[in-house]
Length: 346
View 1: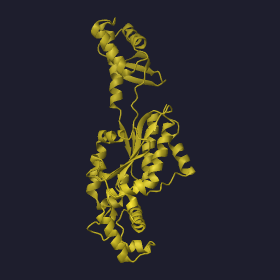
View 2 (view 1 turned 90 degrees about the vertical axis):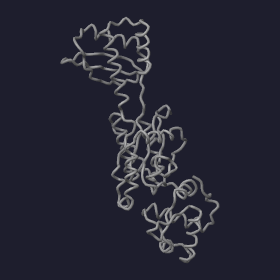
View 3 (view 1 turned 60 degrees about the vertical axis):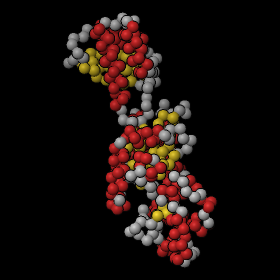
View 4 (view 1 turned 135 degrees about the vertical axis):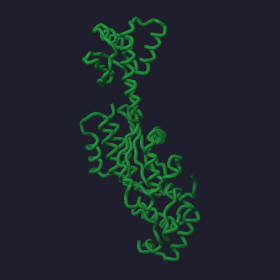
């Protein structure tokens, strides 16, 4: 998407363009010459209409057929965001509220849920947080018979995380089988990621180097598999606040909102879009059809990577909503929220 540079506009055209964009973002409605004249533009309505027509010919504004006013096009919004927008940094009170909201004690999954809801509240749109893809290294593994044909797999990672999973046992099991399977994983596979542990185990079984009997081998395979299946089933994206997308202005554009809600159902595609912001140095803004995913819904995404305490990017968060998002307010809020969440990630 390309268009004129903001420096190519006259001072008068630049000021009128700014007022149209800000008026549209604030109200969601096209802005007319009468509104601009009442807003302090020191020009006659005829002169204002002439400037609006010039801006429309440049592709920066459009006139909906039901209104005499103008609204920014995606090209116009991009020029405004890149060249004219004055961001409003979060106040001390807002920063403190964000940190308090997502920093309450609890598991990291709970913090991710709270962050997504917080982003929704901040933007008045939908909040999104990519779940970090954890691949911890194995430290210890134990199998405990809890009766009724079930086993408890207790998995301890090198990062101290403890996870418990229930395994359905097949047939009769001797206590020695459980001990042998647990000892094998703890001794032979400790210090490896889950992916490496499974590969090592399969290689040893294939080459006959494993001394496990068939019962213990089955337990090892089932114990590692349940951890692997659980990790792959975890959501890649948490979305909250979809109801915010159904505001009063949505009634005038139900097809666009329906397309956006359909887009949000395809979380894998949304996650791929957010992934493209993973290596960004600053918050990224995607406006409408700049991204193929939103060609129909004409939506905008504001996304920022978040990092762990060692500075590694572990995920991306952001908001999605109509193109009339309050970019000047939301962009710095998203950036600060990403930094705040990063402080909780080990």
